[in-house]
Amino acid sequence: MSGAVDHSLLLGEEATEDFVAGGREGHCVWRVTRRDEPFLWTIATTTPQVRAEITYRLTAGDAPTVFERDMSYSTSGFWLGALDFLLTRRRMEA
Image (tube, rainbow, N blue to C red; front, side, top):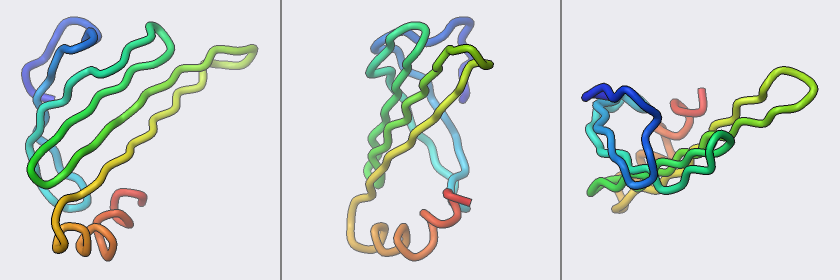
């Protein structure tokens, strides 16, 4: 993400990201939509092409802390949907 910050983002704060996903370059602004410190943190973004949400979970227990990341996204338009179905989703899962 560009524009480094010196803290874990708080609810409602934003960070800008230039990224490569599934072989495509892009730019988006992520906003923190949920923060249950220190165990859960969710960010979301909306661009004309994609809506995405990433949730990070930390689970403490007897063993070392478990870190989980879930990403869900949807594309807009027929052609982006077809490209996602045929190519992009497989590349991201790999």
